[in-house]
Image (cartoon, rainbow, N blue to C red; front, side, top):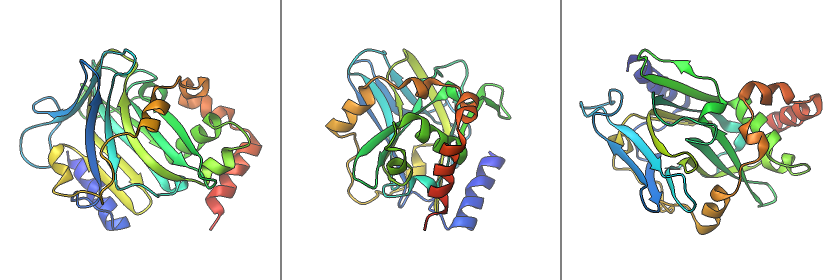
Length: 255
């Protein structure tokens, strides 16, 4: 936990980020029979406080209209280009496929259209931790922007790259079995937070937004994933053309 604590302090010191839960929260939600989305004691890594060692458990039977998710509140309106990294550690053996658990980014384009970007667990390489039973998965800013370029059809790429986060979530819905997640971290511009247990939410509630997907969002989550969303990270990065890189660079340099 030394590294996790240092990371949290570095975020707060460098970016003035909230680490107390007053603004940024994680809300587990589930839909359908035999689903679970909750923090469970003695299943995870050391917590930032106490000795419960909680892990976030997301489990679904892999059937239609069932899902388990964690919704992150407080990142709404953050520009896509400010999303620096999305990461978590997951227990092994447990669910980690190219579809589950996956980060789902609902992006509101400059033209008010909503796009969905999917970032599946096994798409990005495994990184070792100090515990061989836990593996880290990290989506960097470079990878996130490359995924936007590949998953959003032309000519809407500019609209999505220049858009903002409408909703951010972790989802399990296509692979049978439980995912055990811990040290879940989001870094986005001046905002950054690590969740090690349920108490990291503190008493915060970020401003009255819904703590569940809307009906339209559930429909988007349940839709088939694009072929590009299942590509390995290395293949996604290697496939970026000079023209596509120019679009990314132009977005990053805009005021």
